[in-house]
Amino acid sequence: MPTKQYYLPAITVPALILAMLAASSARELATRSASTPGPSGYHLLKKIPLGGEGGWDYVAFDSPTRRLFISRGTKVVVLNVDTGTVAGEIANTDGVHGIAFAPELDRGFTSNGRAGTVTIFDLQSLQVIGSAKTGMNPDAIVYDPASKRVFTMNGHSNDATAIDAATGNVLGTIPVTGKPEFAVADGAGHVYVNIEDKSEELQIDTQNLKVTAQWPLAPCQEPSGLAMDIAHRRLFAGCHNEMMAVVDADSGKVIATPAIGDGVDANAFDPGTGFAFASNGMSATLTVVHEDAPDKSSVVENVATQKGARTMALDPKSHEVYLVTADFAPAPPSANENPKPRMMPVPGTFVVLIYGK
Image (cartoon, rainbow, N blue to C red; front, top):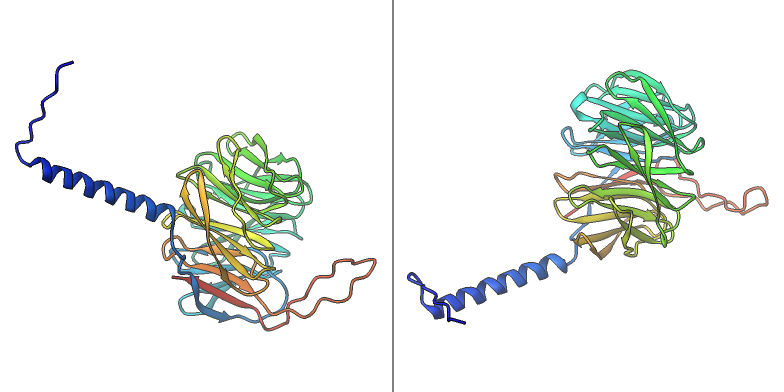
């Protein structure tokens, strides 16, 4: 076989070898840095006391206005996180659970569990502009930009309600296999939802309003929070047996199960940093998981928070994480009619916790 000849008119062979070694080292260093991140750097930046009485559920963050929307039983409190002042409230949202935004329509939506309705409001003025009827106990709520539809996950009727975001008209009801928990949209015509009592993940076709895939999440048990890396098609489900199930959104395969804390109720993913988060109310931690590669995730650290901080929102621009909680009175003694009594929040102690780098 004839020997090939290489012509290097602009560089000497030793210089070329050194350049190749340098490039190889740089690539190796970049790979090592990406796959083995150091501590996240997340810590408490600010604590904003809000007070008031009662419980809370989901929170949602509107990046353009820097406002945090907080569900508080019968109303949504809207907080300017930079000034620490309340910008307004959305009242008459009985049993409110979640908040969703349709930014291109300048609209917001709340899921009102006890009322069995969705409240539609103007995202700038916060004025209520409409409502829609849902199934029983609408819990999670998500906006799908591909279909321009809002979907509520109805915990007591085991179904999802589809609503036209522009008109407020109910378009249909989608039966699901059990109790639906949190949901995310991929922007390409699919909504994914955790089925908490069956430990399953469902894929919903948002145009045709039907379930198109049903996947077991074992070894994950009782999945609650859900987030998505849209670019790499990965779902991050927070499971009550203290793990985060990383799931292929196309095949349903559980790829990894990094450990998280106790009492997870929300998850988030930051595409700018590659961090996936789980807020764990019982262990009072924020688990930070790094997506080293689409098929590899590693726990970076568990940041100390405050007991009860189980729901959260993420600002992908500032990379800040927002949690809410309160102080708790001791749980009453257990009884036959109430074997697992819940701790009650102490009135006036409700706070917003802002974490960042």
